Each structure stands twice: as structure tokens, then as C-alpha cells.
Image (cartoon, rainbow, N blue to C red):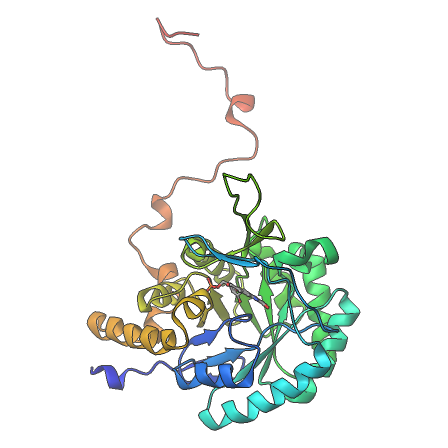
Length: 343
Ligand SMILES: Cc1cc2nc3c(=O)[nH]c(=O)nc-3n(C[C@H](O)[C@H](O)[C@H](O)COP(=O)(O)O)c2cc1C
């Protein structure tokens, strides 16, 4: 098959995307012209920067640092507030619709009720989807633990947002939880139409000379290449327990990275730091690399999706049996020391 004939289109919550590459929230999602540039450059969907109930200035610089393995950011959810966001989204949506590229609004709030209020408000702009950011790690001092930290709080936000809008809802999950699969199941049971996994991972950089954390906020969220194995694992674990589409996000910067994310079970692939580093042209390049990979391997996108769950190279039977909770020493008789063994 020729590369031009490769069909990269995918479906998320009833919406057709021309390709699976989604601009992740927080990257160039602040102005209509920037979002349209990403769509023209080859993005399959555009997520706007997260907007909350009221305008926020965000954190003081330095708030985003490239440390070699990726980015560490603590932008602090700077945004113009829901009121101004409605106008931005309406303007952007009209322009994206002409290009056949869906718009995803992104919202956050400090309480369950405010999540519902922002969702209801933002719906006036008629975005194609609403992504619910319950997982920003950089505002803990103001908002406390992210709602994504517990199944109950994650489900409460999801149910409230679903009740407040008729627009399909994506819930964006956090990587730093004991079981992301449990949280995923809870939000899907509460009505989520799709999931985005993952947001950034909490991290810190310290300047050895001064002994000070590099970011003014001290800690921040890690993204880019260092996040990829964590994101792949999260998507893989989630895909085992839910049926809704997953936008796999974290560390994707090449076509092969995107193929890996789809193999883990994602239906679409979020791109953030790679666009921050390379600009909107990253979309066209990654899509081209995906086509090249698919043609070289004689596979379709549908055959790639979830492939890691079907591959028989390392069958379940060959993996070690699960370790029982009770330590073996408590149940088994004490081992007889070998002659001459040191004690
Ligand atoms: C500078 C910056 C700002 C971000 N702002 C947001 C945001 O407003 N809302 C959100 O849900 N995620 C935000 N994120 C997280 C990204 O959407 C994405 O989940 C994360 O960066 C992992 O993807 P990547 O490795 O491709 O960057 C931000 C990330 C960066 C680097």
C-alpha cells in the first residue's frame, strides 16, 4: 500500500478525527490563531488550555524548564476564566470546523460544584468535546490533592460534569496514583465518554550550586520523553479494564512513539512537549512517520491498536505466578540451613 492510501482517521466519542494526533492541553491552546496553525500543520484534534471559574495569573517564572529528558513545568493553570474562554472557544471552533478538525475544551475547578458550573458555561461555545482536568499537579497549595487521586472524588466530578452538559466528556487522569485502572473504572462508571491519560508527573529539579529548586513553585509536572514509559503503562493498565476510547498522552515525539501508544490500547495520541519543542510542524512529521511505519510493517491502524495486549511473545503462562499477600516465611516451614552456610 502507498503511504498516501493509509487511513489514519479515528473515532472518539462519536467524533471522527482525520488522524489520531491531538494537541494536548496547555500547549499553544491559548489563542485561536495558534490552535488553527496546529490544525493546518496536521493535528487531528485540538485541545485548548484548561480554563477555570475565574481568571488566574499562574505561577511566577521560572515556570517551565527543559532538563534534557523533557520539561518540568509549573505554569499554575494561568487562564482568562470561563467567561472569556467561551469567546475564545467559539471563535476557534468556527475556524477549526472549516478544516474538519474537532475542538476539545479543557476545564478545571476547585470544587465539584464549580466543575459543573464551568462545564455548563463552556458548553455555550459548543466545543466538540469537553476534557475535564482533574489531574494538574501544580496547584496543590491552593486546591489540595487533585480530584484524580481517589476513585470517589474523580467519579463525583465526572458525574457532576455529565449532569451539567450534553457534550461528550473526556476525563484526564493523573499518573501518580496507586492504581490508575481503579480511577479509570470509577470515572467510566460515572459516565465518562473517553479518557485522557496522562497528565504530567510531579517532579523537582535542584540547582546544585545554590541548593535551590529550579522552579519558582519548587516542584512541577514532568512531561516529554522521560514520561513515555509511565504513560504507556498507564494506557495499557486502563485499556485492560474499560472500553471507552483513551487519548494516550505522554512523551510522544515520533511516529514510532505514537504507534507504541496505540499498541498499548490508545485510540488517539496527545502531543504536548514535542510541539513545545518543535512547533506545530511536529504534527505533520509524526503523521508522516506513522504512515511510513504502517506501510513498512504492512499493518493498518486498527491492527496496531491494542496490539500489546494480543501479542503472544510473552504469554501469560510464562510470567511468574502472582506473589501471595502473606510472606512465604510465615506459612512455609523455616528453611534448613545448608552445611557450611554463613548465618
Ligand atoms: C507547559 C505545559 C502546560 C500544560 N498545561 C496543561 C493544562 O493547562 N491542562 C492540562 O490538562 N494539561 C496540561 N499540561 C499537560 C499536557 O497536556 C500533557 O498531559 C503532558 O505534558 C504530557 O504530554 P507530553 O509528554 O506530550 O507533553 C501541560 C503541559 C505542559 C508541558
